[in-house]
Amino acid sequence: MKTNSVRSRERSNKLFDSAKKVIPGGVNSPVRAFKSVGGTPIFIDKAKGAYIYDADGNRYVDYIASWGPMIIGHAHDAVLADLTATAQKGTSFGIPTEMETKIASLVTEMAPNVDQIRFVNSGTEACMSAVRLARGFTGREKLIKFSGCYHGHADPFLIEAGSGAVTFGTPNSPGVTKGTAKDTLLARYNNLDNVEQIFKANSDEIAAVIIEPVAGNMGCIPPAKGFLEGLRNLCNDYGALLIFDEVMTGFRLALGGAQECLGINADIVTYGKVIGGGLPVGAFGARKEIMSCLAPEGPVYQAGTLSGNPLAMTSGFSTLSILKGDSDIYSRLNGKTEYLAKNMAAELNEKGVPYRINQLGSMLSLHFCDEDVVDFETAALGNNQLFKSYFHFMLEHGIYLPPSAFESYFLNDALSYNDLDDTSHVFREFLKSI
Image 1: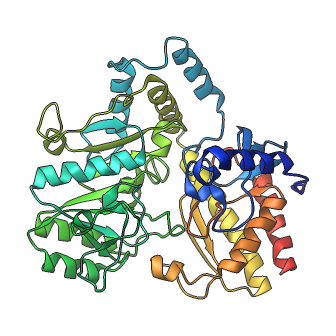
Image 2 (image 1 turned 90 degrees about the vertical axis):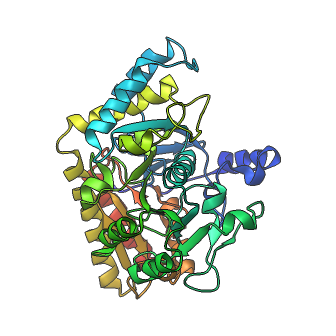
C-alpha cells in the first residue's frame, strides 16, 4: 500500500498561531519553524515505531528520528517499561543514583579511549564543557572549529569565517562578544592544508580542535580519506587535543561511534541524542588523565542540578543496552539506508536531475547539485528552490524529512522495507511533477 496524501493540517496551523503569541517564532528550536522551506510546521501528537502523527491525525514516515535519538524507533516498549518503573520511584533527586554509574560503565565499555564520562543535559552543554576542559588541561585558549559544523549554541561555536585562511573569526549572532570570537579559529572541513596553516600561525596557542567526525549540519558529509588521520597527527605534533563532537554519530554509526567506525581515537568525545534515548542528555568523556582535571577532583569547574537525572539515565541505559544486545542492528540500519539511497539515485538518474547523495551508516542527505558535497561551501551550491518543492511534496504525501537542505536524515530500525519502498514511490511521483 502506498503512503496516503495528507488531508488537512488545520489544527497544526491553529497551534502554530497560538504558539507564536507566547514562544519566539512559535518554536523552541529554530529549524522547527520551517523558515528554510517555507510554510507552516506540523505539530506532533504522538509517535510509535517508524511513524509520527500530527495534531490532525495525519501519519508520516519519520526520517529525522527526533534528529537522531530514536535509533530503535519511537516509544519502544522496553524503554517505556523501564521509564515507567523509574518514574514511580521519583523523577529527580539532585543526589547520586546507581543508574548513573551503570550507564557510565556501559559507555566506557563500548567507547574507545574513554575511561571516564560526565553527564550533562544537552549536546551544547557537553561541547561547551569539553572545550573548557581542553583549555584547562592544556593551559591554552584558542580553539579550531570548522565552517558548517554545529556544536550547539554556546558562544565559542557561533563564529563565522574571517577575511582570510588564518584570521580570527567574527561573531555571527548578536550577543557573542568579539573577545570570545578572537579565540575561535575557522577552518574548512576536509581541507587539511588549511588546518595546518592555522596551526603554524598559532603554534603554541591552540588548546583543541573540535569537529563533527561525520558532519550532519550541512547535510551528511563524511570525512575525506586521510582527513581525520591528518588532524590527529597535527594535534599530536602541536600539543593540542582533538575533540570529536559525537552528539550525532555516537552510538549511531557503531557501538563505539565514529571513533570505532572510522578507526580514529579522539582525546575528548562529546555525546548526546542516542545516549539519552530521546530524553535530554549530553555527556563528555576522555581518558582519566584529562577527566581528572574536572571538579571536584581538579580545578576545571562544571556542574548541573539535573545532570544524571534518573529518567534520562534510565532511558539512555535502556536504549544503549538494546543496541549492545542486538549484534545485527547496525548492519540492518546500514542496509536500509543504502537501499533508500540506491532507489533515490536510480530515480534521479532516470529523470536526469543533477544530484549528490552522501551517506555513511544510517545518516544520509540529498543535494540537488552537480558538484561533490565535501564542505559547507559546496553544500551551499545546491538548488534550494528544488529542495523546498521536494520537502513539501514529500510532506504532503506522508513523508517527514529534515526541513532544511543542510540537515542529515537519520533512519531508525523500526523502518520497514515497505516504508522505504513507499518513500521511493512518493519520490518518483515528485520527480514526475517537476
